[in-house]
Structures are given as structure tokens and as C-alpha cells.
Image (tube, protein in one colour):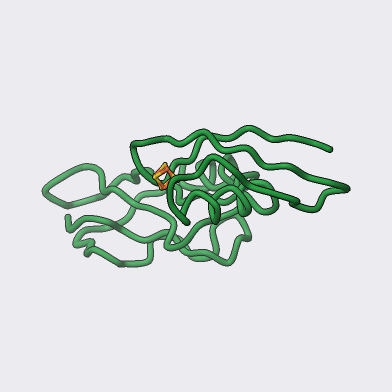
Amino acid sequence: MEKRELICIGCPMGCPLTVELENGEIVSVSGYTCKRGDVYARKEVTNPTRIVTSTVMVEGGRADMVSVKTKEDIPKDKIFACVKALKGITVKAPVHIGDVILKDVAGTGVDIVATKDV
Ligand code: SF4
């Protein structure tokens, strides 16, 4: 039986989670205080994903940078490619919250959107 120890990132309590696996299948999850911990542990072990936040340069705005994020979670192993794809991007002001800054980042099918007006 394989055991994976994780810390839940669902809230600041950071519950220590234990996932037991048998032949790659989840047998049990323990240590969570609420259902979100169970859901997080199962996803983290089988298909870990994250929202990525970053900034890109803005031309002609009140600020030089705008904060951006992936519209949805992307696979954890695509985070580096995502950050790399955002390097060197400059957008023209005005930029509005929710504007698509980059489509299909790193072939994930997920867009990068602005999280601020500039
Ligand atoms: S299991 Fe629930 S209470 Fe514990 S850290 Fe995760 S979200 Fe918070």
C-alpha cells in the first residue's frame, strides 16, 4: 500500500492529509476537517492543477504592469510553460478586468485574463 502525505491548501488551517493508494487507485483519504480536503486530496494525487497568477507589462496606462491569472486551473506540470509564455508580453492600455491577455496558454486550452483595470 502506497501512502501520500499532503497539506490541504483549501484554507489557513492546513489540515495534514493522508491518501492511501493500491495499484494507483485511491483506497482512502484521511485527516481532513471538511469535504474540501477530501476533494483536494483526490485531485492532487490523480490530476494536480493550479490557478497561476502573474503580471504583464502595459503600454500607455496609469500603471506599467497589470496583474493576470489563468481563467481556470491548469495542470501543475504546465505552470513553468505558462509563466514562460507570459514573459515579454506587453499589452496596450486600456485593460479591463476579465480581458483576455493570452489565449490557450501553453496549449492548456485555458486563457490568461486581466484581474485589474489599467
Ligand atoms: S480540510 Fe477543510 S478545514 Fe482542513 S485545510 Fe482543507 S479546507 Fe481547510
